[in-house]
Image: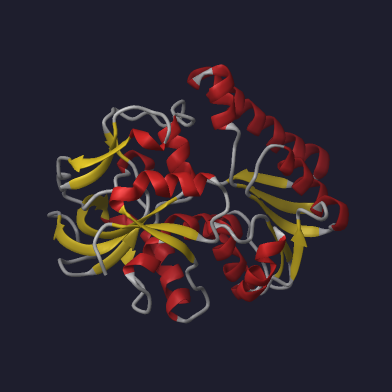
Length: 334
């Protein structure tokens, strides 16, 4: 099969699009003919080597943690799917590999694709949708009438989180640059803060839940605007920066220490529950998102579509931080 392979860590040009071995199908696996994948920041953090303290791959490896496609084969123990089903998924880090024509994924991480959107649109949803679900529903316990701050509202997670939070009945505040204000309002944001003009921690207070997408100093600012008893969902740790500075092993230890001390101090000194968000690769949660997408409550936001042969350009574009929504990788023409 054709796949985008990395044989070493580094810049986007380490990708080589060539023939690679097709994945084997285990008893619980669903073999998916990939129509589309997408780029997530974690992909290029892994590609650059910034995550290698926590995620160690035996190179060569195929990256990619979003897929939409058609079931081609199922393992002997699979009961939820059959060949011909249109599905989407976000596999685990250990079983990434969606930058390819075929991928095998455990059936528990797979869900039927929403009927009202294309494969390209569906491929933009799984990882960011599951991250938003974990942040707002599982860890955030967001309730109707509560105030939620969602940083980077025009990004992949932010664009889905705004819509999900509105569905949950919250008052949604988000941050973005001036060029994206109308976009995030169209997604449902009630209040928008242009971060180029003002600091959110100077104008907000008594927030019930904050979703921090930036990490570093931003975590402390987000904690500052929360009410006592509030919740903070942290999407980003400083692992890439610490890996670059201290190496993979010491960088991982330092990152873990920073998170633990921040979480404990938030609880003991501020009465705030801070949680580091690791999305669950859950077909059950994806089914919940499918229902909302088919009901028109959540709509995918796709910025650009790149063919698989241009995966390096897609990563370069993602690293600019200017994408509105998601960057999709077309593996099979629609």
